[in-house]
Structure formats: C-alpha cells, structure tokens
Length: 377
Ligand SMILES: Cc1ncc(COP(=O)(O)O)c(C=O)c1O
Image (cartoon, rainbow, N blue to C red; front, top):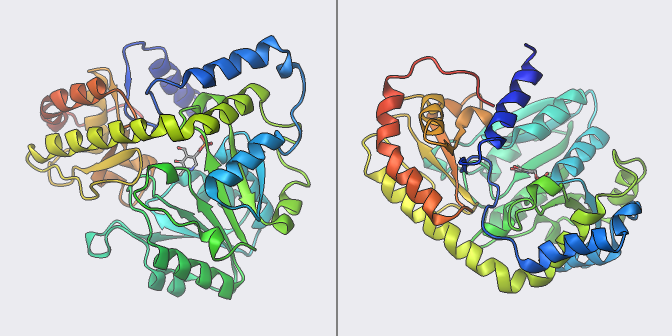
C-alpha cells in the first residue's frame, strides 16, 4: 500500500472509534457554545451556504479577528484553516536560493512547504533545558543570512509549550528586519498563553501573523483561520490564493459567533485545560523515568519526556491506543528529538485526562515490552 493510503487509513480508523479519547491533536473537545451551533444551523436555514463568501472573508469576521488581536492597522485574510495561509505564504515568498529558518522541534508542514518551494531549510535546535527549550536571539542572529527570506516562529511552540517574552519577540523582529526577511509568527496557540506578544507590534511591515479557530474555539473540522499582515504583503498574497472563491460560509459564521461570545465562554475552557495539565504533570511525576520539562505549558498540550524510561514514544502511543486513548509521538514534530517525548492535549473533558492518568503506569509497562509497533503519523 502507498504511504498516503496507510496514513489516511490510520486517521480514518481512529475517527471511526466512538470511544476514542482524543489527546493527540490539540483539538478542543469541550462543549461548543450554543451560539456557535446556532450560527451554523442559521447559515443553512437562510441559504447563506449557497453563495461563495467574499474572497478574503466575511467583513465582520475580518474585523473581529483584528479586534481579537488588537492589530487594527493591519489587514486579515480568512483562509481554510491557518494551514492554507501558511502554505500560501511559504509557496509565494520563498523560492530556490532562499533560506527558510525555523526551530526544531516545531511544526513540520511549513518546513515541507518551503522545501517544496526550493528553499534551503535551517532548523535551529531548541530541545534543551539549558536554554529553557526556547530559540535564543543569539541563535537566530547566528543563523540568519542575507539569503534568509522567511523565519517561521511557532509561538507558543507546538509541541513544547514555551512562549516568548516581549523582549525576545522584539529581538527576533529586529533581527528579521535587519536581514530583510519576512517573519511568520504562527500564533495558533496564542489564546492559551499566560502572556503573549505579537511580533506584528514591532515589525508590522513584514510580519505575517497566523490565526486559527481550530484550537481555542474547537472548529478543527470546519477549516477556518486567517493570516494578518500589512496591506502591501496582503496585496501580494491576495493576488492568487489557493482558494480564491472564499472560505466556507458556515465555518465563517460559526467563527463570528465564537468571537462574539469568547469573553464569556473561553475563560472556563482555559481553566479546565490548565487543571488537566496539572493532573497530567502529577501522573507523570509519579512514574520513574517520565518528566514534564515544560510545565505549565502555554499551549493546550504538554510534552512528557520519556527518554529516561527506556521506552519509545511510539510504543507508549500504541499502548495507550489499546486503551482508546490517542496521544502523539514526538517524531511527528522532530526527526532529531522526536525519540525523546510524547505530547498530550488538554482541551478535553477532565474524565478523559483522568482515564489517561489511570492508564499511564500500565501503558509504560506495556511499552517497555513493545519493540515493534506499526506506522504512526
Ligand atoms: C503550529 C500550528 N500551526 C497551524 C496549525 C493548523 O491550524 P489550522 O487547523 O487552523 O489549519 C496547527 C495545527 O495543529 C499547528 O499546530
């Protein structure tokens, strides 16, 4: 079987298991606001879905996204999830001879997009307690060259859960400006951070900020997000985007409703996921060889380092899947460091986390005897 078939069958099988507890993809499984559900029903009842949306998104949504970020002087382009914007920016802005810089670990798809565009990819290692699992301004300054066209910064970082300070963001922005590079600030997990600074505040002319509704609002399957940038940059991106016929109307109406109730609805989500993180940290601490090096995490997920437990992340993933619990192997994020950790998502009902904590000791034992596991993605 071709790899793409194996991969699709893997996810299809997981999604057909009604008992599966999804702690692997940073999706949000806490109940949706009624207003969001109603907005979707309304968009069917009033025939809005029979139309194409405006190419850059429903105006009300574009404004609400900018207001949510506080970036009133920039422009938003609604995309089919943040990933479409990332794809488009990477394919448009970099080409053969250019360099693309990001961190390792980080999120692998933009790396792939830039490589497919012909860029030379530089992944700066950050899996190191000595530097708090963060990219340092010095590392970026050392790596950047006149050929660097794009710096891709995931902040809060998926999978690590670290988040950069205002000074660090300012330093990254200055380094990018001095080198003449664009900065993609992937803010998919911004809403879960204790404090978050937007690079666009310091470097509005060439920062591309990404926005997602998949995580904080939990609309992953609806595919709606945005890129935010200056008028000049968006003029270029808006010229020929992959989906020039406008994003899904139902999804956009759900996103509008979500932003309108965010102030009332989201604080409880945040409180539950932080409580879930504490339960996971305590469960991991009780097991020899496991550690949670970034706790608390600024994302809706956290890593568990298994490198001293004499198990492979894949074996632990497999052992937990046998208990109808999905977590993610580190190799999804990093070839270099992926053998050291698993990632567990926390915007889930607390009883799912309790089940995870309950099964974790047994799963570690099972994983110790598992040498050969099937492919994981
Ligand atoms: C860092 C990062 N960026 C972007 C995305 C994709 O977001 P969306 O679902 O809005 O396409 C993800 C999804 O996991 C992510 O982890």
